[in-house]
Length: 340
Image 1: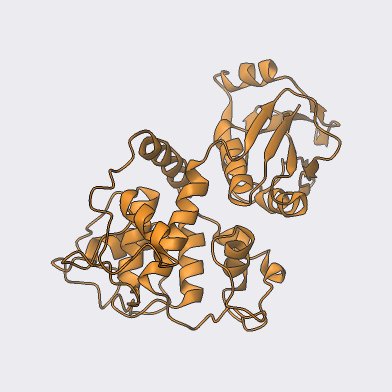
Image 2: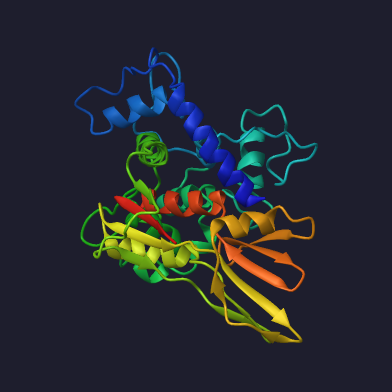
């Protein structure tokens, strides 16, 4: 389901890029051109991610609430608002409230977590929540659990993985002296700046060049394929997001990452497993079109595999590749090579 959500978000981003929102009402009386967030607020309004507070004001300096940011994320990700018969939180049961549907939608997509009965939709959003909700909306919750050591801030004890991702992606920085101020409340203009940074990275398809069937440069950083053993059956999965992340961070801004995408076939015979061998895309397509073939997706390795009788094939579907290229784009990688 989450994979489908991410794919839908990518398609929505492309549609928005093709049909940008007009900036007719993007000027706000309380955001002069000299304000540090002027460009971000202008863009956020132009993209349709935020609105004003009325009478031509944006609400500069005001705290952004959980509900407000939930609504902003719904716009960013292109989620269709849902209105279930009953709310998921004790304090989100009134369907007449403007935030009922955004809160329920953000919860359904994992951006909001249910840590208790209450959601406190009108409470100010803390900076660590700003990072966490944004990264969860992008479906990077599993990845956050393995990158906690990359958090560079000395005052962060919770949500370290989310903050590390937001920092590595250039989405949210610190406040100076190695501090992040995780408990400080986030303002509306700070939220707008985060949204615009994510939006621009998602939409800028030219930011990261994708190369297929080309010679991989010597300076490329390879994303290592994972390996595991399930009972007595060796598994040969592709590179998980964790490996792609490690390679992208090592490559640095503008660097080059390489993914090994050749399909790998394993045959089971009498309880024994043959040595894996790479097959061509044409062979893979023949298996995919076979009546006996069943396809699956490994959430652990963010890759696909096919089972047909005694044959198991690990491969990268177009959706798998899009997911990994998007992560590289979010981390500022300049080129991704798909190596057969």
